[in-house]
Image 1 (cartoon, rainbow, N blue to C red):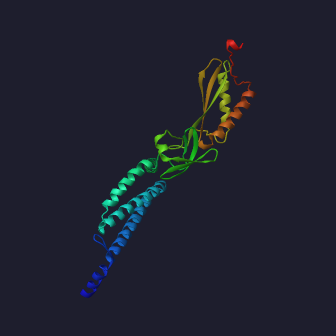
Image 2 (image 1 turned 60 degrees about the horizontal axis):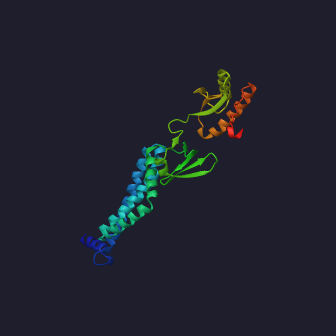
Image 3 (image 1 turned 90 degrees about the horizontal axis):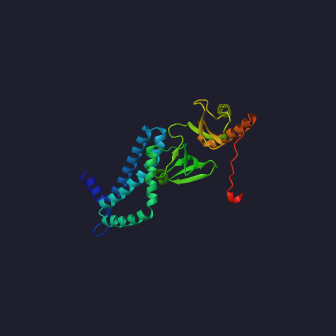
Length: 278
């Protein structure tokens, strides 16, 4: 038994490299391999547990965050191993600090994107499939990564948005809590036109549209009186906000047709000339 123990002790102390401060032996290599194996399986177990108890939506978000955590832990483990085998890591830390300060200034926007990405993924303020409006552009969210969010515009073009923009700018999320949204069409008619007739015609233009919801009911507001016109707002409800440009166009075609059938002329802008032009 003592001979076997002595043999393994000698085996572990076989040197591959030796200097004043660092000695690499078979035991050192086995130590490094053991640490990496334990770290790998520990991270795998933690990831499996979190993904198992999470809902499918949260699990999708956690995968991206856990990848980032894995890289961070492996980096910490490398420094730990270097320190454990006798390598002075203060030089690395000092050099790394200087490098990271320089990179911090050069890559501060990317770091902002990464932090914003983690916040968006964990906070659930934005989900894949949501319809958003940013900088007057309406788009559907296709994917959310740590650095950027990819959306598809109504022109079927992909738009890559840095995540910091989604945190710093005002973003309208049309479908965050509820897929049903209220859309609006503004219409003007000449003063003297029967407002009840206009209201009835506007409501008839949306009641048979297949993509306009029956509940909540569409409504018409008499919004304002101007010098020669009355302004109406037609509000209708849909559950496909991304398609509202097409839905609104269909309704406007119907309004134009039914206004003509009911002898309701659309107002023409009044052109005023200066006295110098008369």
